[in-house]
Amino acid sequence: MELGEIQERLMKIVKIRVNSKGYELTAEQSFIHLVEEMGEVARQISHKSMRPEKYDENNLKEEIVDMLFECIVMAETCDMDLSAEIRKKLDKLEERFPC
Image 1 (cartoon, rainbow, N blue to C red):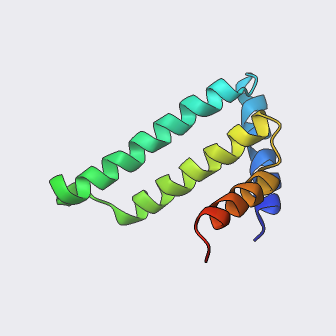
Image 2 (image 1 turned 30 degrees about the vertical axis):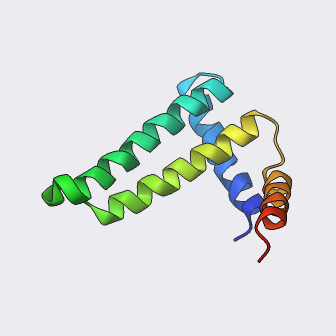
């Protein structure tokens, strides 16, 4: 699945959720949600070594995807062409670190 399709599908869902809760989607809210998701990833990673009985690999995978989704939503709230920006960044990295 291409990034553009993911972004389009995700934003349809996000807009329905936002409208049902009656608030406006902003970059600030998206960033707060991203930090929350990062905390959930951190919790699973720490559980793996410190509290293995609470570690849940499937939950870790889900939380990583949630984190990625919030990055996509934040890009949308910042009117960013995420695919173009990713290509530009990859080009810069390949210049620095030729493959």
